[in-house]
Length: 183
View: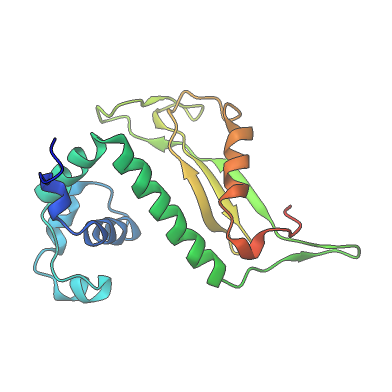
């Protein structure tokens, strides 16, 4: 590709499409097709601060194009982590106080997701007895703010890769949390 050529997905405002996806996730919607219900919905546009709601086809094409370029995915993930860190830095975190010290809880856990009636990549038989994924989550503070997550195949043992995940989770904490007692 020449420098002056522009990929079709780069013509779309990245932030707007990501914002729309997160708005859908917050409503419990996980398919591209679910965005159809928000089309023409002024409340959804205003709440999310968007000029328009993109069609499921546009979102799917955008993501498929973007995911073909590893540097784009890495850049997006770094931007999302930085955004998460900015939000965590603004949050008031409730510590756990003992007679000797004050700690900030940081919980790690997997949670199997049932995707048995799908043909998605990397689903596996989970310990809960269904086919799906087994993502790992890192929740920070007594409030349980999600600081980091990782999608994993359903048949992956919960301890596989956990030390690395915990290291990344601690590195992902906002600067305001550095140097505090993490429990």
